[in-house]
Image (cartoon, rainbow, N blue to C red; front, side, top):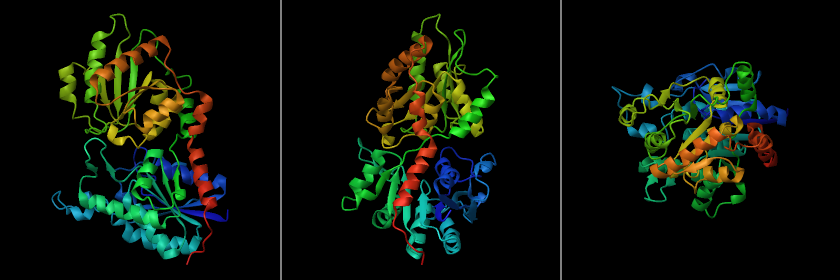
Length: 429
């Protein structure tokens, strides 16, 4: 392959993370089938909060991967647990740029890539991509995914709240708007936020490249389920609902309204109805809601379960009766990456999401899912009651198999490859 792409990605195996690594790993896996050789510039494993070898085998053999030194301010530079706030601008891994820029320049000189691609949610990755572009002349694609700076549509408050952090994020965003050959986002609303912020920019360079699911991983999960039971529960067994992934104790993913609605729904269910179990897998907030569970007498109904290896987590999605999304209105411009995995699992979906957000819009477009606001106990209880009844009666809609295929991550990588192919050729200085 004569075409090469330098991928600047903090989230890359062996980091143990949720959906953060899927976008960069999918490019490394699928770009070679589209005529592009991936060159990966990532961080040394010591920078990661947790590591796992589980996904290392999915990096194609022969892939060039350079891992440069990065220190986590909160772990490596703290004294007695304290560190200066400026050392977290634009994020806790700002030191990565000191090693990654010279390492990236060496990779550019040696391999002569045709494009530099950097990806959020680590803002430092974009500073590295920008610096490499300015120093080498190689076209830069800035993959912003979700908005880095947002304003609450109801209160007017900004996220992030710290002005210095907003300023640092907007600084790289402005440079991307001015200098990047293309800017990519996961949803239309995320793109529109930047379009509105930079009305004089060339918006033909703005592109939406959604997330997706990994078909190979699901095939492996299905193979391990074969012959071993699983699938939807029988009529006499509990209806099992699953939320797989992090829960934030904030208006964005606060489960407290759902838990109160669950109590109300269970109290109103017929005595002969199937029992209900709720699994909150890998939530990260196991210790915060025990008191509420006790108050609502849900300790035997709701379990805060530990994380699972990736394939095991997918296998669980395939085996339960229903899947749950938590997303407050403050995340309206985003679509959780797990939603695409839920599509592939082909289980009924209960989305506690704002009706004006991109998640609800996608569910409406596909004709699946039951939607209720995350912060409205009464409407959640009503929706949950209907959702459980639909599961019991076999009426709950799931995405058609032919529609599912369109959300495979290989399609997103193909979109990036087409974007790379359309960029003007440039010779590195």
